Length: 224
Length: 224
DNA sequence: CGCCCTATTGAGGGAGATCAACTCGGGTGG
DNA sequence: CCACCCGAGTTGATCTCCCTCAATAGGGCG
Image (cartoon, rainbow over all chains, first blue to last red; front, side, top):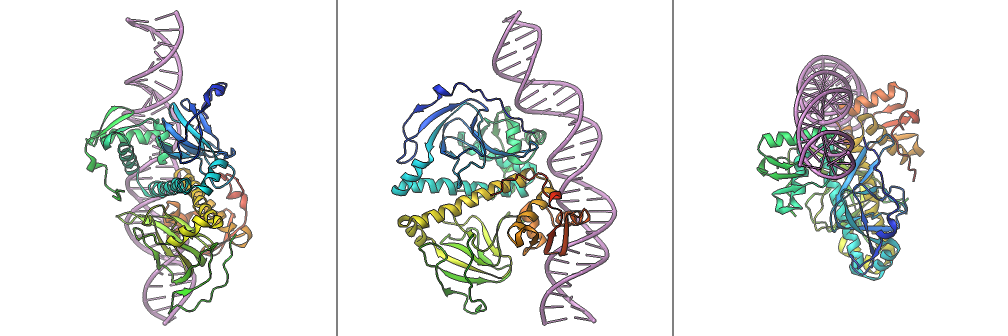
């Protein structure tokens, strides 16, 4: 069950700073967010596109009864808030303290119309997300808990430390809502992986891959 | 909503025919496909973008052991095969006999660079699919079988016959692989809905919505 | 009419959820 | 420095929803 995180307001004044452009041809500014702070909300006007500079964030949707689905975790370089319509379709929160570059959508659109590199960048961001979501649909709809957790560990390991160690900035609850499972199942599955010798947990947020082959059954091996 | 111009069918012998453009500023040609025929395959070169003229199609991915996830059903006006990379990430098949317009990707890209309307059209297609996939992730990850089937029925009813009747061109197996369930569960859930008086099944492929309120619990009511 | 594919129904089992207790670890204040 | 506290994580017991396996019923087309 998702419970809204307390948001420390009142420090917004100092948080905004003029900054160099993280994207081709468009200037933006950065904001700092604390752990669990909202970056933007579902149904909010999609006036900005957000690019992660440092830290990690999650985008997600919540049902009226509190069930939550994490759509994606975002790391430095990743973009959030690219939408078709005037309003966001997901909410975004900081997983840990992070810095985010905000680019005004109107300026980005204008730049994209004249600058091919910006248009291309925007297109790549959208189609990159499409690919990710298609992959993740296969996982959500058709994979077992063990396969889900294994795939997640390998993906997290791939993006940090050369694939040998998965560092997890997010909580078990975040992982559960990302994989369509519960925290208990995440925990039990990791314990089982450790018993099998597939992984070693230095701490709950730092997991070494010991025997990759035990985690790769059901992998699709596209390797791009 | 894009409505297809009438296309002269019945010329299956010569499946390819030069045809007018379904998209702004780009000429394409159409092809006819029989039920269950492949339109394009995963890992095939993404040389074309495909627009449905008539009939229905499914895009999907398959794991090595045969598990299948249907990503989306496509109806007249919908586009398939918009990709970032050089190869398709999903396969597409005809659900029933259908006509599809093929637009060469290289020409579409060229047109998009010079023509704002084409660029806009391409962008809308991609972001439209993004929205759909985000909606569907919530369904796959966090909804019960009854909620999944109910949402599917309402979505299908919405696109045919003013929302009162859902006409289903696809099989139970297609629906199951779309919703992350089994055919048996689909069947049982529909039977239960009928017992509850929520629906009436004229035939297995034609379902009337009788008491919409019984199907809308857990709906998110965005209404756009 | 008979065939084959699709859909439905039934019985039983299992993967993962739920409910509950306990442990761990990091931060805070005395 | 240590006791305390509180959130995060783990573990256990039980339940249940949905899957699996199996048999039966339609329904379209030759």
